[in-house]
Image (cartoon, rainbow, N blue to C red):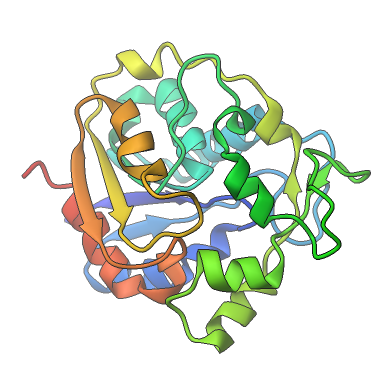
Length: 248
């Protein structure tokens, strides 16, 4: 029997971001699910959505689908959701996999670890520094040039443009909530980290070894590609996810 994957998307994304990867995993005989986090995706309420709401939406999905022996994969911001879901469902998670993802320490917020250099790339062309929350309670999607050059520079411009056009504003509160992660860091669930060598979304060294080293003992899997390899290299990413869930 194949593996059961639950794929957690990052900031500005929805479950749709994993569509091509799901096709690749399914073609190899695996089951893959990609729920959209609360407050994410087009046409939904975002103001007041908390990090806990995002976590609860994944827990509810796993419960409703009756999933067990799950390999939980988190991309970017999704890594912090993986951390909390693993705390809440430790008996149903076989391994956690972090794809160039944020890994928080106990009592940290997402905004505590975001580098100034990254935030600067989100500034609109008028030069105003992006703020944590606008009047709609959201963090707006990155400028097109930042998305093309820093997030998905290994994709054809047509693919970069079509994916950028599907992004949605991010509920700001999810980045401002302080997370209690004492239990996560005591869990013995095996952990893997997939590192994308050409990821320019964050400064060099941020994801690996910066974030990966916070996992303690973990399996490292490397691949070429940008921050958005689920779009630009779905077949290769699917293979690396499968590799990441093997003990050796």
